[in-house]
Amino acid sequence: MTRAYNFNAGPAGLPLPALERAQRELLDFEGTGMSIMEHSHRGKAYERVHNEAIQLLRELLGVPDTHHVLFLQGGASLQFAMVPMNLVPAGKSADYILTGGWSEKAYEEAGRVAKVRIAASTAVEKKYVRIPRQNELALDPDASYVHLTSNNTLFGTQWHRFPDVGQVPLVADMSSDFLWRKFDVTRFALIYAGAQKNIGPSGVTVVLVKKDLVDAARKDIPTILRYGTHAANNSLYNTPPTFGIYLMRNVLSYTKEIGGLEEIERRNRKKAEVLYGALDARPEFFRAPVEKESRSTMNVVFRLPTEELEKKFLAEATERRMVGLAGHRSTGGIRVSAYNAVGLEAVEVLVSFMDEFAKRG
Image 1 (tube, rainbow, N blue to C red):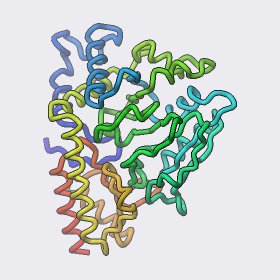
Image 2 (image 1 turned 180 degrees about the vertical axis):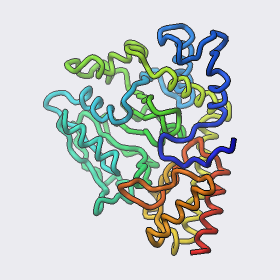
Image 3 (image 1 turned 30 degrees about the vertical axis):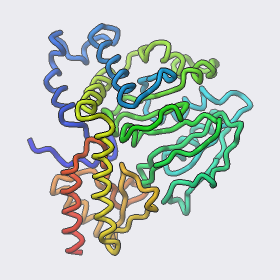
Image 4 (image 1 turned 90 degrees about the vertical axis):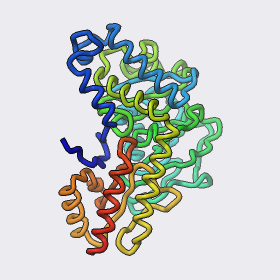
C-alpha cells in the first residue's frame, strides 16, 4: 500500500507506528482474545490503557498535580458551552479574544448561557491576519476568565506568546496545536483540545483544568455537563470513546519514544521553515496573508494569482497523492495543515511541486 501525503485539517493523519500497533492488537489485545473495542470500560484491560494515556499526557507536557486530566466527548464545540456553564456564576461575565472563526463560535455559544464581552478582535473585513498585541487587550479584571484560541485553522494565525491576563483565569481552546510543543501548563486555568489534529482520532476531547476551579464551579447545571462529575470519576462517569483513547495512548507512547515534545517541536519548526521559505521565495505568485510574527506553525495558508490556478493546483496535487490542501470553504485558497504526524518528506514533496507549479505559472 502507498500512503498518501495527508494535509487534512482534521481529522488528520496519525503516526504510522501508532496505527501499526493498533493493527497488530486489533483482534487480540494483550492476549485477552478480544479487541480493546470489545472490553468493558470498567474492566482492568481498558483501565490500564486509560490510565496510561493520562500519565503519558502528564509526563510529556509536564501537567502538575494542580490540574485534572479529563477525557470527554463532544469536541471543542461542546466545550464552547461547558466552559461558561461551569465557570461563569450569576452576575459575572467572561472575556473573549477573537482571532478567527472558531473563537467567534466559542464567543457566540458562550453568549447563549452567560454574559460575555469581546476583549479584543483582529478581524478586518471578516478576515484575521494577525494575533492581537498585549496593549490591544481591553481586559476586565473582574472577569470569570479570559478565553483565547491558540491556533486558528481557518486563517493560519497562532499565539506564539500567550498574553498576560493578570489574576484572571486563562482558558484556551488548543484543538489545532495541542502538543506541537511544550509550554507552561500552570499559566492556564483550563485547556481543551479535540484530539483529531495532533493526538488521536476524532471523538476524544482532552481537558486540563485546575482542581480548585472545578471545586468552585457551578453545581446547578446538568450532571453530565459538570467538570466535577468527570473529575470525580476519572473520566469514566459514562462510557468513554474507548478505542479513541486507546489510539491516543498509542500516539502519546510513540511521541515519548521519539524524544518527546522537544523532538516534536524541532520537527514542526523545520517543516514551517521549509513551507514559509517556499512562499517567501515567490511572493509574486504565492500570496501569504498572515503577518509574519503571527504565522501558524500548524496551518499554512496562501493564495495563488487566480482561483482558476488554485483549482488546477489542487487537482494536480491530488493526482500526486497530496490530499487535504483546499482552504476552508469560508476562506478559499490553499491550506497546508502540517500537524505532528506530517513528516518533513511530505512537506518537501509539496514544496517541490509548488516550485514546479509556480514556474509553469
